[in-house]
Image (tube, rainbow, N blue to C red; front, top):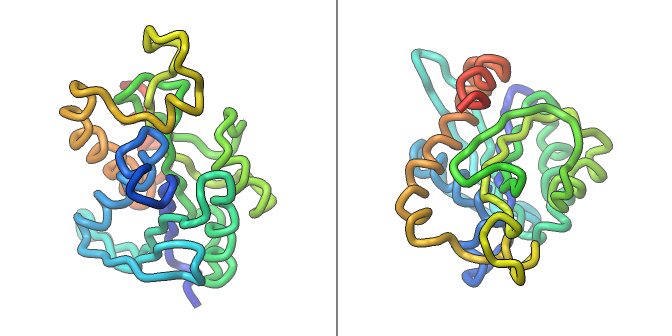
Length: 199
């Protein structure tokens, strides 16, 4: 039915109290894509907010689903796998956007496969889809241990909000993340990696 569609899933936690936290970088980036392309979200089986639309770039067009799981981070895979199976989306047409503590704020790295790097959302997707062979847009949020606050553990860090200076940079960072996802769709992963991974 939708074998030629792309699925771009942004990871995060639903609810207002999480909306501006580091762990919601995926949601924020998908919202940027939705705004660009006039895509509106509906409900998918109570598991995700799901929007369908078309992106275009340089005369190319791509049909996309944008997804924000409602399952909370640790069960993100249930939503992604449900959408993948229901709409018959090829694994190579799946892009997952998520926060990454191993990268400084503002850095973006693109990859396919490899370790989940301790990210519970990615672990859940790998487990539910029985593969890690999908593209990932890793959005750097820095690490608690580098923040100068020895008492700030990992959970508090990812569920914490951005600093004032980071909030100023956030719109440009989210735009870059959206650009990276679009470039994977239209130009392929290798070209997108060449542009974004070296920054």
